[in-house]
Image (cartoon, rainbow, N blue to C red):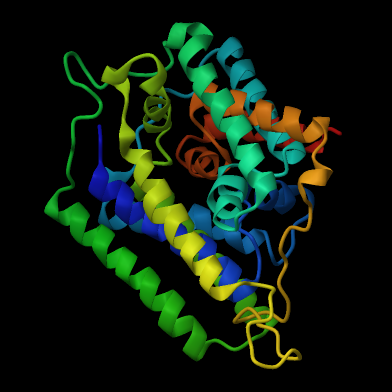
Length: 333
């Protein structure tokens, strides 16, 4: 169902997590690289973020469990298990070679006005829409019930609304008051904030509906079946990417905005910015096919790396199969 309030508040939390990691730690919130790196090359940059995303399930479960997504049944046969591993492989191989996913390219890349991310997003989004609508006759896009259009608005309960507003306000207070005023530039502070950013982003995924594969797939349905179309994720673009773009243009990370040329801006907690340096000139066949592979996986199952982490915790059987495929794909040249 169309959830304008949930998705808008969740998008603001996604914005806080991703832009906060950039402004405070000087790093881009690329979940796919964090996830693969957490297993293949664990360090102080990726492990805390993934731990934060996993931990985000706890406050939602304790205070607003009705916001947790419901998932299709876990794989129960060898065929469904193999299919899950295969989708995970496409996800891992695609994000590795496409150099990012919805967080790195769509959320962070578009907000940094990166032409390379714009190209990647156009490729994997178009591929996902076509896959969801035409592979298998579009039957993998679930309806919202007999005679119920998915664009019908649904609003949160007062309890859910209180949790979402309280959490959103807390993220703003943390990022704009607590971190700048009370945390000093140090390695320890960066580790702590990496965890906080992951926690904020994970809650944002749940609240916005990005963690719900059915909601993702319904967003793709505009091409063939408007009765199944859920426009909620437009609000992720408005309240997630939009504020991130304004923040980037205002802050100009990595560029000198001071009166003196010898005083370039710095992240709050780090000495240097760590922004992607690749350009459109670096695009090759692997980049294009990687974006296509990721789009296929996204369109088939409605799952990208961030939501996959959350689902893996809630559905361990699915998670073992999906993550095995993801790590395998991330390891293949």
